[in-house]
Amino acid sequence: MRQMLDGEYPAFLNCMKQQPYRALRINTLKCEEPAFQAMFPVPLTPSPFAAHSYYLPYEAQGLGNSPLHHAGAFYLQEPSAASAVTMLDPQPGERILDLCAAPGGKTTQIAALLQGEGLVWANEVVGSRARTLLSNVERMGVRNAVVSSCHPQKLCERLAGFFDRVLVDAPCSGEGMFRKNPEAAQEWSSAHVEACAQRQQMILQSAAQAVRPGGVLVYSTCTYAPQENEQVISAFLQHHPDFSLEPGPMQNGRTAVPAWGGGEEALSLARRIFPMDGGEGHFVARLRRQGEGEAAGYTAFVPDALRGDEKKQTDELFVQLFGAAAPPWGEAGRFQNAVLLFPHGLPELTGLGVLRAGVPAGELKKGRVEPEHALFMAAKPEQLRQVLALYLSDTDALQAFLHGEELSVPESWKGYAGVAVQGMILGFGKCSGGRLKNRYPKGLRL
Ligand code: SAM
Image (cartoon, rainbow, N blue to C red; front, side, top):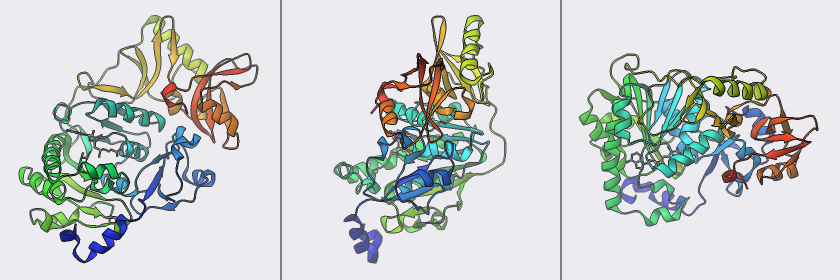
């Protein structure tokens, strides 16, 4: 770091003695930004790295237990980490691949920018981390995501040229995590940096295939090491003359350094963020693939139709929940033992380790369909027939619900009802005799 930063090294060392930056990103799929600012009890300062992202005071701890967090109103995301999606710049209607996606900070940021139009495919090779990703996609109420756990090479070969934009937020030596997570420093070694660099090149090589001609590829890490940043991009460009670096919409932080890579002037189009720039640390490079064109030809996914009784039971459930047999979004179909609401334009899913496509709506049980938590999380209160509307001032009822307890509801309520906080669905329960039996998933309870 001394060699890299030269005269700025003392300032960097000084930063290392301070508390890490903390930030949240408001989830615009669930709430309007001014409404969130008005209800949130902690002062927020806008971050320069991404829309809807705000610095938090370091002392504001424990926010993960807040009912607003459970309802998916916000995601705790380090401020400079949000810069990669600003550089990716996803547009509503596009197909986006997030290849190294867990725990889902960037996936859910992409989903919010898509505003429900298009597709975000979130992949995480490590199975246990893919389940955390799934849970965050569900909490944030995303309707148009596929979540998979597949090796990047296999996924990108099968979906070659399918995506308008691909994000590789690569596993790295995590030097930008040392302030936040001192244990990360214990794992550091120069051999680890070299091993990460090799792995990053392999992942990037796979990712390149998934980008359509004329599409965008963004590479990011949360480390400072040139071997994992400028040098990875230099090596990639040597092997992929059909890609070139371009500036992106994020001009904060500072330029990357050509001399730290292979000397190509274009490397200065990539961005670096150091703690002196207002974030823990990130490197982001945006590349464009030559050519023009629609996504490559692919086999479209055709969900299994719901048959006979399954169709009747699903229709009945939707009538009970939404007041109509047609769901308020998506196309209802069968996938294994579940009813899902699929987004349009999916490719064939088999063999790609798909954990979820669209929104799981219900589980097919003998003679009935049991609604899923995910269905409620993706719904707006105004789409549901019965909603228990709570506010942050209803502290006891909110705590009781998040602990898995029953709540009181009007005597006349029958069947399933959503539970909302400040106009955002938090979960659901089943009503009878003036009580709402809690269906908040056990693994999420306080
Ligand atoms: N994008 C995520 C977010 O914003 O929440 C963070 C991603 S993290 C920096 C990198 C991820 O890559 C980790 O979840 C890790 O499990 C995954 N990973 C590890 N080895 C990998 C490999 N060989 N190929 C692809 N991903 C890998």
